[in-house]
Image (tube, rainbow, N blue to C red; front, side):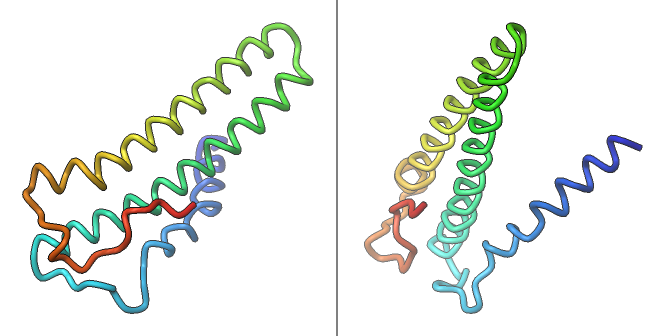
Length: 122
């Protein structure tokens, strides 16, 4: 029962974030490979912002545990802080792969596509 309550708590907390990926009018309709790439770019952009927010919260919570905890909790808190930092770096590397490497592999000429900006606006 505790697992179910915990799971529902996170679903209720983060479900409104799924609406962020929707736009009232799509900037570029999905009619070719550029539209698919634009959809992937937009979706990954919102997932990255979500992951960075979660990572920052994880660092804050671990920092609080680092300051207030005992010896064993301090070790675990330091480990959690490093894991959160590494996770954020991996997420940012994933952005560069989606924004710059995938168009090269799929031979997408981004100069001819109408797409959203490659800049990650956090």
